[in-house]
Image 1: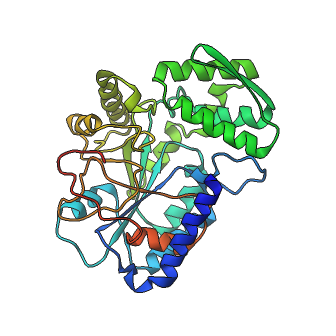
Image 2: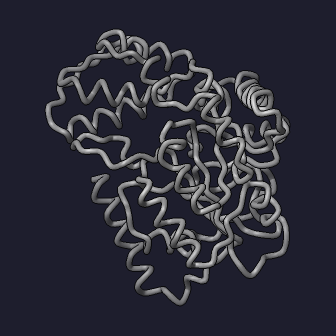
Length: 348
């Protein structure tokens, strides 16, 4: 059913391009694009994280197309300026990357540097420190390898038999969704229990997948790069008590500032969907000293202060889609209903 919904949505966007091309001059001031992992396409039927991946070839094509469509490429400082001033003739696009996935330095950066465009990287500082836990990668590896899986969910042990790709995909979605409802300590305990049961080295997987501070120092030498914070451990803030959530925000900012010797003014809410942060976290972002905060709630950025700078929408690209026509419709803004003003600090 989810696959059917995805292809119906793609068809809707493709039709919008064919039937509404005169409307694609766009609405709003511009769009912030969100990417997570950049890597060459892999073989294998079970790829539960494929929606979060794009290839370097697609990134290259997308940037080239956005240049042809006369978008201004901006860093987040200029996005904030465009969001509060009068509309300009040309619309903007901002390229943002969440996390410290190694593919950014290995595969994405050569493309970005060749095009000479600005981009923003949101860093959860525990990962370049070597202590972050990429539990979603461990979960993927475990389900790919096993056909019988048991785990404690609450006080009850659940058992699953997964022999087909569809079964494995459904189980990944189920367990990932459950884990994201847990407070950080409970999530970590559940993941460590799973990894112990099935011989998964969570620490090694996490370190291997992440850039370290030396990799990030290479990016820091490029004036086109803006660094933002994605907290320390990349937790679901909505599952934390407010003092702990504020500590994640302030410590993530402080560690990144110490590492780079520059002010960190921009934040990405971890995961960033409507279930992962609340209005109180928007207020905390301002208290912590961030000039902006981005979500993964779909939408475009309006001018003249109509978009809350600390709850800005982004377009999260689905890596299973390689259509530039779909990209054109999304960045034009015609695919989204007009957003109501959010000056009150409301996250949604």
